[in-house]
Length: 202
Image (tube, rainbow, N blue to C red):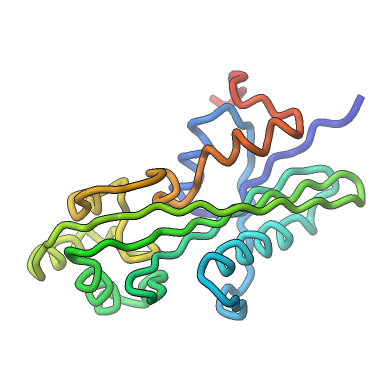
């Protein structure tokens, strides 16, 4: 009988942890420590897929029998990549740019399937379109004072106070949060993972 594979989330993101906790997965967290700044690609969509794959490969080096799940998210507005803000001023500039406009949120996801010395990496991509309200600078500052913008691509969190800035979305809400959950249902059953079986988590 084959040993049950460990499922590892290669991320310290509370949002990704929360989304995996919503389905029947027993998993542990082991964040990747790659330097994201050293990677480049021809397009933003290729970059998020690349970063997700590299995160999954990085963590996968520690395991012999596991499924490593990794993801990466970026925001694109007017062909400009809006990553995580460097500081409050950077966050203000991003939110000012986003006001009243539509932007794309790309999330790349990768599964590193490790069995003995055999490694199979599956990567995929999802995107959603977000339309922001036409909010003013006073509202931007009020949002920034919540501190929620920190460590968020595009400087907002749609699942928190940032929802007040959003007018409409087209696509997956979970992709905007940073993890396209439906991709789990497309990939994991191929490896005998039952997402509808009750988790042993407490």
